[in-house]
Image 1: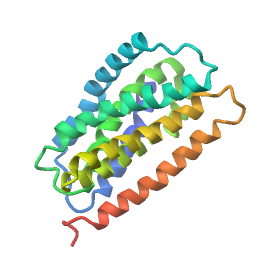
Image 2 (image 1 turned 180 degrees about the vertical axis):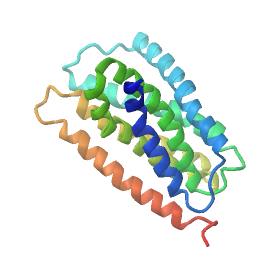
Image 3 (image 1 turned 120 degrees about the horizontal axis):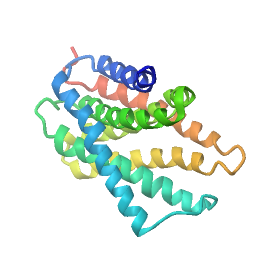
Image 4 (image 1 turned 45 degrees about the horizontal axis):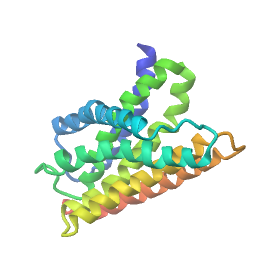
Length: 224
């Protein structure tokens, strides 16, 4: 039970952070819960199915090949995981009446992403124990949050734009880019010191996420 709490604690800290950043018009808590659960269950199922299909179509077995690890990071892990979140935000959250300002894109994208991160983290921590929980609390979980914020920033703009398709896809591809970059530097750990690139990618993602939050806060039509 203690491991479970440690696994999900960083997830709920981030959720609370984003919830309180939604200053001017809070989202319905039930809808937030639905998005979290869809991320935790449906997104994981979609990801698992797509991973299985990809392993059959194009198995990547050479762990010391930089090219194969690049494909794995960007076109397997990054693409599949972010796409599985994207379709929930696009076809469930974005269609709701409560999604009535650009900041809501960030809120719902983070809820879906944190649902995904919670399930993923539970599996990792169950196998790796407390050291894994501690490491992921400051790396993988915040990384999923930044991917969600970046995607949600553009999907929030898309809801109220004539360029909905283009902005939605920019959100998806931006999340894939940051997710892929983060994982790529971790996957090629056989190159000495290259892991620094993952932390640089995460740092840039955090900085852009903070800017995205402030931008949509300042543009809220509910701001008095």
